[in-house]
Length: 378
View (spheres, rainbow, N blue to C red):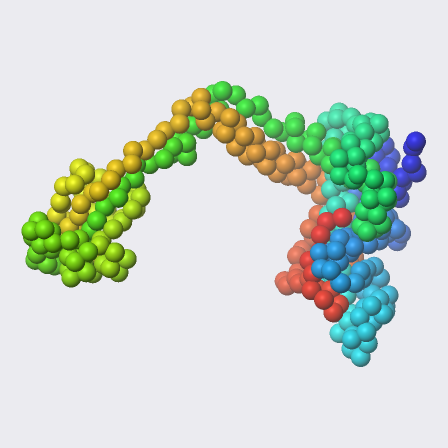
């Protein structure tokens, strides 16, 4: 059954692409907050999605009231909402509450308008590229998602009520998300065996483990002390006794000089070279290093490992898929901004980063009257 959708308040997809092609004027009428290539985003639609964003923000902090600052710049309604829902604010001056409402509005309105503007951008680019998406496809995607996430119809209806959304809202969001997915797919290169082999060659260390060595060391301040430590060890004195007497290394002095699972280059360069050239059980030193003179003995060698290209292919493919997807999504956003930002005009207090000629304020903070919180996208 077809549902009367809230998309009509936004300007349906089919209306959108027709207007984009026609290149209508871009002045913003009083009943709208922005115009994208001649297509208005109505104040009614904006207020609805800002309410959804406010509900989402409140849900992140249990007990936080839902306050919708949808009457700039005086925010008379927002101030009234704050006083009604947060009695402790009743004695505050209007100017104080208005400042909080302004900060909340800046946060929520930017998130909301970004969502609505980019919805137009993506659909316009999809039309330009001949990407088609039927109502039936969108409905099927939504039905599948609802069935997998909600076990009963009442649970789904509760979700809609809690988030302030209608089924038509979800259909619109699913349409935009699927359009974005199709745009991204056009930007995503295929992962070829050559690309996998190149990645493997450039990241071999990620597909293996380096050789590790256990050792005992004494770090002495002078060559003479190091020589005395070596002589004591050769005469049968224990590492525990010798390290405690001669070593200045705070990490190993009281543990018999023990270092475990050391990889090449992890320690002082001189110590590392000597240790990875030594054989197990052979006393080495004194070796002059950056911090003094070392006497050392390697006690165990754990060989390194290296997975083959064939063994690593699945992981590399997964990595490249993720990287390519992120790059494709960035490319879609960049293309949309390049194609449509200059045709996106926003009205007065609603201006934000997606709008033509926008200049960011010097300072920007977010707040909820009487509570902390961060805005989220609708």
